[in-house]
Length: 173
Image (cartoon, rainbow, N blue to C red; front, top):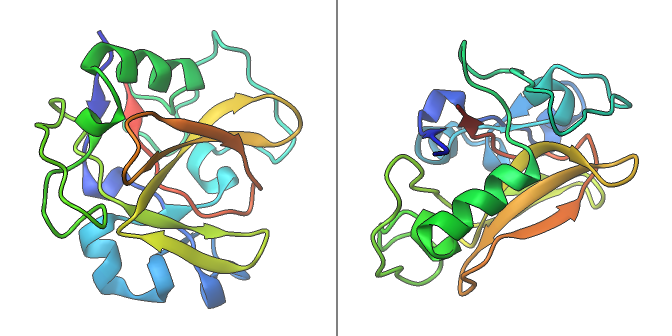
């Protein structure tokens, strides 16, 4: 069984003007967003790995997670999504989230909120209330992988991203 920690203070972040000088920030550099959605973090801040580190599927990377917890691999997200019956079951049901209401009951312990991301490739925040983006320690090439949950979509989306992007973090046990 995969267990995810759902503690707001273990979510990680990064931001626009803050991005150039910090590894953690709140969406649009607004502290109120951090209180509701958590922080967005760079790859290095989240994992405590260097930008070029490669991690095998058997290595558990603690990063910023509490003792005994680790940053998930993509297979952890895939396994969880399959176990609960789809990505919609990972989403918080608050009617203010996901640009539309999610009527399904979330899986115990995940309760994802759409905190958006800082997209380092275009230097802007995007998708608050629409998408949730989480770091993974998996890599297909030189770039790290992220897992996203998107409104109107019942599957997890995986793609490469820049180590300087700002994403949330979920810890797995």
